[in-house]
Every structure is written in structure tokens, then in C-alpha cells.
Image (cartoon, rainbow, N blue to C red):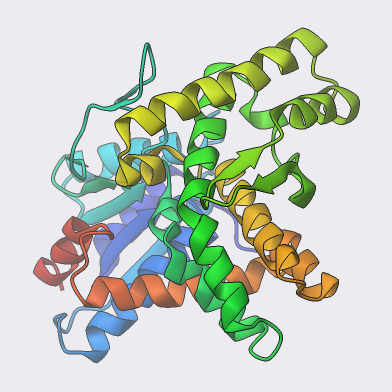
Length: 317
């Protein structure tokens, strides 16, 4: 791997490029933006100037103690102030959400700063993938002959409830400062279904696992277990499905939804190997299927993608 640029070195490289450059946080973001650029170009919607999508890992030569999102925003600020043509996409994370006494989105549209720094609409890029067709796309691709239409129908029945619980879990884990301890803690068996198409999450079981497997203090885990249904009740009262998708954590929350989808398949008697693969496997294939559909949505002009960034590409190529 080539050594990372310093920021000044990257700025010099940008000045020598005869291309339009977009800086992103990591490999999934790079893959998604590159795929959209390819599809737009295939349809003649971009100019003749090439597009380069860089991951911020190549600009860490200065060794600043910043996370990827902060590094992208720092590099973008320095380079654009110096006159470089640079677009950027970063995760919104939980900026401009209010969880004190409720759940509010204080920014009702995509955010753009300094004309070419775009935030994702929800917590991260993966939040654009939180609709049923994205999940079905993977299942149909990976298991075309092993999941029946009836099983897909069961997933559809419970899907929105799964997203709402994932949102509640995400907010509770974030506000209790336990997010980093919650990755991978949910199991398929933590879900239960009701006849009305609602899911129930075993919050006490999750709390016990956090204590036994992750070393979280019992009192802290119990507090999280109480906060999850509290935030779920808040979201139920608001009944805003788009808000559910925005506040779900792009990693921890999405894991919960895959476990719920796997639970729905198990309920329909789908082979255990398939259930296990849906719950915890095939991460690369899940990502590729999601990126493919994301690019299709983008070229159709869907506002469930960062449309401002695509407009900026058209204007600068």
C-alpha cells in the first residue's frame, strides 16, 4: 500500500489532477459513490472530465487523531479554502437530532456545507439501505431457490416493526453511551412476533448478554434495557417511519434488522443454514447488493440518495 498523503501533499495532487474528486470516509462509501458515477456516465449524464473517488485513508499522513468523518471534513475545509475542486460525503451520525424528552430531527433535509461537503440524510450511508427491497434483493440473489414467496411475505409483515425497534435500540445505546459495546450482541432468538404483525424485542436478554459477554455493569445494562422500550413508545407515538430509518445506527441498528429478518425466515421453516447466513453472514454480498440498488435509485433521481452530490458531479465534470 502506498504511503498516505499529508494534507498539503493531497492538496498538491488535487491541483495536478484533470479530474473531479470526491472524498469519502471508507470503502463502502467509495464503492457506492463510484457505482453511481459509473451509472450516471453510462447514461450520458456526466461531462467528459473523469471522476476520482478517494477514501480518506490515503490522506492520513499527518497522523492527526481524528476519526474518518472528522478527517474528511478537515481535509475538505483546508483544500476547498485553498481553491481545490473537491466534493465530500460524510456520515451525519447523530448531529442535529434531539433525543432529550423525545426524538426530533432538527434538520429536515440533506445538509451541504461549504458548497460541496454533503452529509448523509440519516446516521450513515447504510441508512439509505433501510427499506424492504434492499433486504429482499440480497435474499433473492443469494438464496434464489431456498426462500419461498410466503417467507418473503412474512419478512414484509414484520419489517417496519423491526426498523422501529432498531431505531429505539440505536437511540438508547447512543444516549446511554453503550453503542460501542452493542455491536453483534443481538441474536435471532431475541425476537418474538405477534399476530398483528408487530415484533417484540427481548431487552432483558440483551442486557444480560451485555453483562456476561461484554462486561457492561449490570446496572448500566439494565438502564439500557429500560430505555429501549421507552424510546420505542416515543417512536410509536410519533409514527414517522422515515424518522425510524434516519435514527437507526448504520451498523448496530442494521444488525438488529438482519436478525429480525432471519427470525421471520425461521418462523416460516426456512433451512437453518439460510437463517444463519441471513443473520450474520455474507457481509460482502449484502453490501454489493445494496450498492447496486442504491445506484439504481440514484440514477432514477430518488431523493433517498444524496442528490446534491450527484448534481455537484454533473456540474463539475
